[in-house]
Image 1 (cartoon, helix red, strand yellow):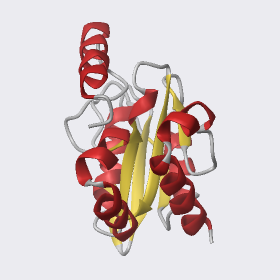
Image 2 (cartoon, helix red, strand yellow):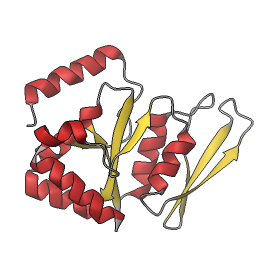
Image 3 (cartoon, one colour):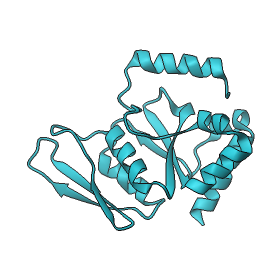
Length: 171
């Protein structure tokens, strides 16, 4: 089962992040480049959880709408009229798949043009947080949530976050 393999990979990383960090390109991470189309992001996550989606044309300047379908619920991603954006796509998906799954940002990818994301059942993240501590687990794998920018951060904010992470050093 893919989810179990992802759990085991993340667990192995948390047991020894210093030795595993540079190699952390397992199948359990969804790597998203800042230039990636939103349809690609949805497709990647839909490959790991039972999320269905539909890309629809629109006359708005952004050109598309994406409709997410999960557990009998349908949600249109609430993009601005003029454009789609990765942050809105990710936090809408994170919200839709809750409470069954958690989408987490692999924080060591902060500051790169390609960010890493992991999806596990919520109960698996709870086990990891109970085993390694909530602060420690979230230092490496931070929950994706509304109004938290990931791709659209300005350079000064990224540097400030990186400095703060250096000071915390794995909590």
